[in-house]
Length: 310
Image (cartoon, rainbow, N blue to C red; front, side):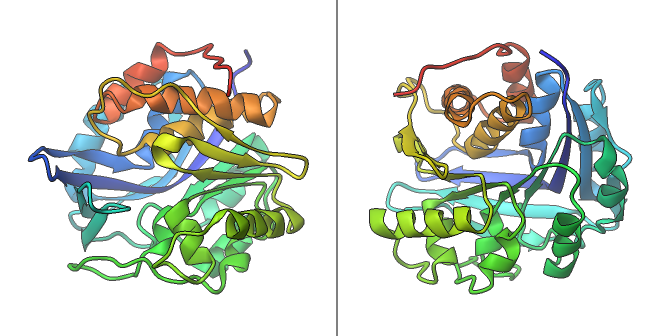
């Protein structure tokens, strides 16, 4: 396979994760999950992120031997960086999140300058503060390659030191217009549709997907946890599943792993459903480990995965 060049824009986070089972984990996260997968797979990655000086030593120790990673777009800014506290509990549909500190939004200048050498750009809203809408429109309108948007924390209230509720995003079309690939989970779709308190039913999801495709999106990926991923194009919608994981350690970053592997194959002209199937397969293996370093090692040993979808 040829090596592709991916631009990854988002935020490097310090995740503090607790579960109702009493487990606690602290480590780097955010855009580093997709970065770890694509670097582990051997592709060139151009990282665009702001990171707090308080995390610099930890970040550089982690990524120091990722030979295909280009960090000219990685900026260290004053402060502790993006510190997020996550809690998982069985009674919650989605995790609870408290954001203790955040970094400034990205300046799109570096991305715009690098477009001629990128095969695909991924924008993940890891914090919801990652880039302003005006700057995002500049990126999309000047894109010289396909753009993948992961809604993620854009659907959360922009507040610090308190539980971040899911909110409505009435201007969602301005975020999506011009995007080629769109990723969201069911809770995030609910926010886009204006009722974050209730997950969308099949008819609502279908209508949302149809409108996104009419706006120019080539493929919509609605992640559904253990149920798999609803993959939709103009021609077909299908749920792509993987075998149930035998040992679940941490589900944080699984959607990111799915995204990165699927992106890699799409950039190589693999059909959408085949690419998504391989992405789901790798994500199903990622739940058995925790952390960015472990994700990188998983990807290094996984090149060539081609799962058959159901």
